[in-house]
Length: 267
Ligand code: KIV
Image (cartoon, rainbow, N blue to C red):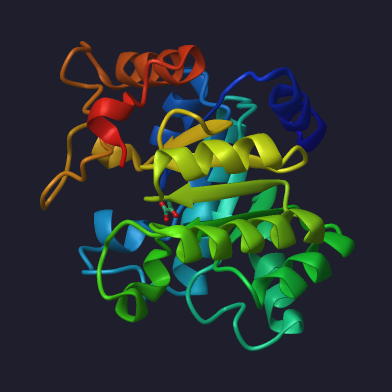
């Protein structure tokens, strides 16, 4: 996988299937299942470390897990595009701090970094992209700012909030973001944005079936969760004999557009 190949998939309307992974074995299985992009998400704070939010995840944690995933992919000559999440506080101070943090994840094996938020992040994205760091942006429910948002709830609802989210998304595309995760936003808004953003592939999670691709946290799609399963999650292991088959089924469902089902998984 490469940035031009992802851009080509986006242009042709082939849906991009993304999953999180945090270790070598699951990364290799996801790659063998045909997952296009693996995200080493800071969700590892919740699913691996047992934290209540992603806020306490730091760059050393992200480096460790990114290296593990990269080694897993190398062991099986995997081809998935590897995205490393920049954790809270590692890109907020300055564009220079963001570049230093991005370099740590790129040197650990990431092909792209992801960062959360809109508005001020556009200048950071532009700075990174100009210096050869591919960037995936993230709008809507941004878990690193859960305390400011007042909880894990749908974002971009209503005319003003929707317009602001759209404006931020366009600014991120203009800054050079090649992908944009849209988390827990109304399906209609995500679909409109997907049509408008011709140079930035939208990747939905709780954003309906109209996005250019989908992402789920691996534990969630295997039905492994310490708390309540979010509405946008489907347990692909429930109808599969094993983990790899569940991931194959996820990839097929994303590619054919049968997941997500807006009547069950969206707002
Ligand atoms: O950290 C993560 O896993 C994420 C996805 C939920 C998009 O940001």
